[in-house]
Amino acid sequence: MKIFRFALVALAMNTALPAVAESASTGDAPLWQKPAGELWLNVGGFSRHFNRQANHNENNLGLGLEYRTSSELSFMAGSYYNSVRKNTTYAAVNWQPLSMGSFKLGAAVGLMNGYPAMNRGGTFFAALPMATYEGRRFGVNLGLIPSMKDVNGAVILQFKVRLN
Image (cartoon, rainbow, N blue to C red):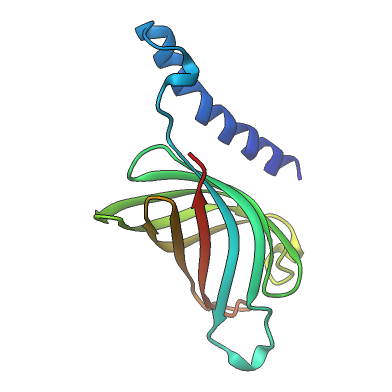
């Protein structure tokens, strides 16, 4: 659990420090008037597993934050009710160097827990391809979990709403 607290503090620091440094160096407008990156509230979503007989939970409600620092990079952290009916906490970096308008393509890499087939439910490293659509107020993340060893692959869809 300490690793996730650390990730959330790092996310908050990454959000605040660039604006503080810019405000201090320019001396223009106060910090609260500076434009910030985009802050999104992730509300969980759905998964569709490749093995349809496995009886997975595919309604994966949760709560998380995503802070987009640029068109290519965002930081994500949150928790959701996973496909094996356990709670998962995650912290990840979403790097999406390919974009066309409101659509972005890349990969998310980070740490997560709550899956008994991976490190007995403990924390493990994960990486998955990620496509994103971000409109003015609403967006979606679409990810692909590949099937491997004891992991049943799936397509995941995460909904989000922009807060700023």
